[in-house]
Image (cartoon, rainbow, N blue to C red):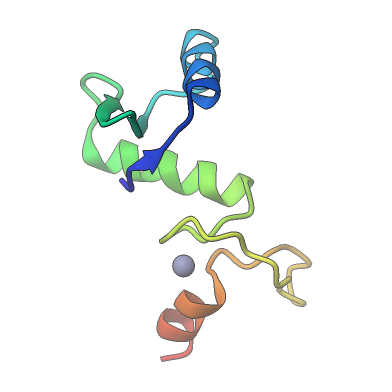
Length: 92
Ligand SMILES: [Zn+2]
């Protein structure tokens, strides 16, 4: 998981989300302190599935988390991959 630098404000927001059970994993850096939140006892495949679901519903590339803008004309939904990864994986 990529580490994200956060401000005090977004760190507070993160803790709120954890308490609301909206967030079960995070990897952030705040003032040189790394805070890693993960669900205890979760298997790797569950973690990957959760990440996939989260990114898919947020309209992000399932591999890198980049915002996806292009719509798949066939399904009418956003592509599951960003331009870069779509080029790399879907059009082999
Ligand atoms: Zn990507």
